[in-house]
Amino acid sequence: MTTPSDKTLIEAMLAGDKGAYEKLYDRYAPLVRAVCYDYTGNLADAQDLAQDVFMRAYEKLDRLRKRDSFGKWLVGIARLRCREWLRRKCRSQNNNAGLNDVQAAAPEKPDDSRIKLLRKMITTLPEKERLALHTFYLQGNSADNVRRIMGLSRSGFYRVLERARKRLEKLMLEEQENI
Image 1 (spheres, rainbow, N blue to C red):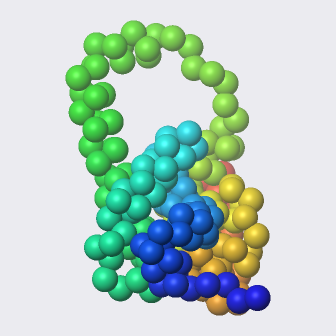
Image 2: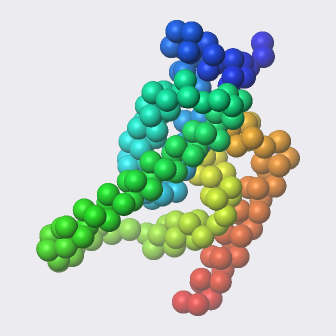
């Protein structure tokens, strides 16, 4: 049994098959969550934003001209939505500056400094490498699923992952030497 193309699923969905959009969701949700997590650094916010991205895409799906480029279109919506979220968050923080002073006095929850450092280092990687790490390691998706979502061959996906791991290792070693 072959996997239906994005174009086939979109046309089925526009013809009234709601299950077709569920298949598109299952196919692209890990990638969209990874893009959102890349912006937010918070899994709960990333999941909320991903849901919003899929709702927006659903509402505008009939406007998509190149139906075979659904994944790229969806990632574009995700990036736009995340930028909106960041702007709103910055405005909110500016409006709540007094509240932040009170919150700063409260003790922080203990967190492993190595995990914080790793998260910080991941943000410095190129986008493709960050997305591969997020979807494969942090979200626990299979390599075949992630490579298909990212539009990479099997060997291409493993090369991206290997580059990301090597780059992270180098960054972590450099950071440890600076301490």
